Length: 316
Image (cartoon, rainbow, N blue to C red; front, side, top):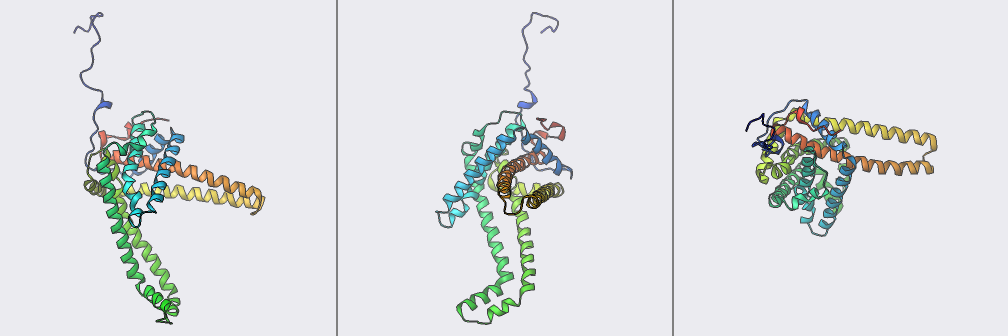
């Protein structure tokens, strides 16, 4: 076509625009330490633009999860694992909402249930894998508890049956040792929790967007966290710092109100109720930010569409 001809019809570009190309979830790559903060920054920008909708979405999500937990109470033993079993199916909806907002699309509450219509089987199998991991984690915790407190448990059991009347006295003399064992048990549980969380951290988005199966997803999730332990460590410290500041502010506010109005006044009761409601709303919003931060780190680590910091959507 002659570009100087003003009468020729419009010509379409035979190549699709970059934004419509299919995104590819690649293998995990190492990211710099500073990206631990970058993931929170991206998540805040994406969530704050729709703070009310995100808070409502997390409220619906928690209500569904609570309902599943309550129904599970009526199923002996296996019912305890119902929230874990359906966890990937439900969390896939939050990941889909994060994907939608990342691409600057309208917020759609229907995406909360995308796990029931898209890759439902693999997500359900991912839940089964998580149940297996949870059982293994529980067994290891029980073994560690018995190894540290086996003597005390046996002494208490014997004393309760009257077989060893000195058993209770022996336990009373183990106060300092029991404190040491309690701290050691806490460290053991924390050490077991780290690989458990690393295995499931990216499982849902890998199954939903990367089309992995549940077993491959936990393997790639573990590798991703291990390769990026420095930014992941920085990523995990940031919410602890924020939580510490918030707790200090609430405690200071309560102390000041107690000095002004008295601990048993009606004003203190109303302030306490207001703080409880505000804490609930803020907690739901921060949970939304955390969810989107997982998606942001997933895109960054697994090279979805080769994202870089300058490609972050600017929605605020």
